[in-house]
Image (cartoon, rainbow, N blue to C red):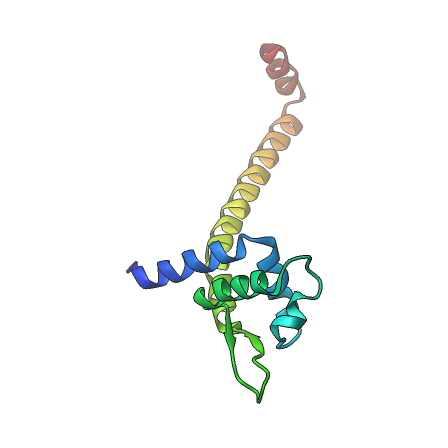
Length: 133
């Protein structure tokens, strides 16, 4: 697998940006549509300048963009960048899910073999339990 250092940098910036609960709440709000800094600041007990800094971090991470609409400067969620993050997470989630399915299959096979052994020879299960004690 070829590793793209710039892609790793983008992932690092995005995950570091999302590590902050205020920025995650801003992303959650933007998922419902664009908003101005004032609108994004409403639910927080922090200054407009602090909210602007949070938006700047999200913008540097590529998670949001700003546009100009007359006097308004709405902030928009960059859904494509979020999709890239979820794709990265899903790749590893799918690997682990497959490993759990393999483990489940192995356990089911083991349980089936134990049940077949005890059904064929009821004394074998008792003898095995006695040696385990």
